[in-house]
Image (cartoon, rainbow, N blue to C red; front, side, top):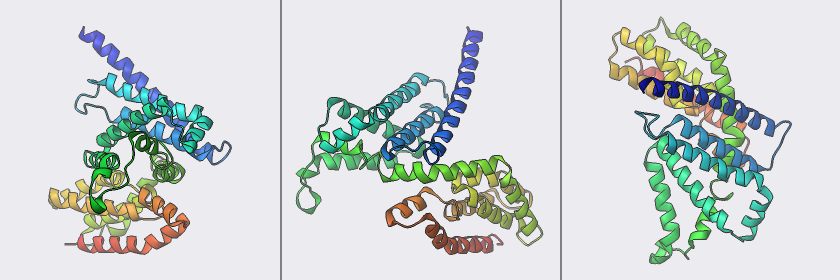
Length: 319
């Protein structure tokens, strides 16, 4: 019996591995193709991006993190429901847009709107914890029942169908944030991942060692410089910690720094990677879109604060 379970488990791992590889290649080609040889309507493209992103979340962040295969049926239920809702928007795009513009909401729009809202809340909980989903739930409750509140806290009131339809439209899940992610963030992250896989992160680490290795507080300074350089190609604090921290933290500990100090230096230095041009966090892309300016202008504006951040962090790391 144990041997059979092990065989089934290995077959599933094999299937999941090549499923993820195939889906990843398709996702990359889809996003690159949208800006080259196969442009799509923006809302349809955003629907592709949201659908694929949610599928990856449920593949990589299982229901039970300690035992990933315990609730596989639930993870795949979310994946299938995500695919069904996403493909509905993609395949029936013209009908979907006309329905939303005329407010002639059908039962299937409401049902799919409820499903995708719950799926996004669950995906947010898995990736970010409970805070953001709770805020979103309170916002939905306020939209539904805020009309009953007195004074300036109240509003004119919105019915359930309108709230769900707004969430499931270009004013909600298919709006500006997902558009910025699909049109800008993904391509920059894809470029950063390519640089990391090609060995560019190792070059930055070597540069950091060469610049600071012999100075006072060299290991800590090295962590700051390495994080600044890696932040230029990642825009992610988490990726920065994982990449640079794997060699800077052990090096600092070998030089006598405490575990807490080594971890603190790496965390502080890596956080600045989100504001280090040219590849910054998602907020920079949202800012460019909302402000109506080019992303290059945001990079120029962020350069001086980012450099000041790292100069300060490098100075503090000496002590």
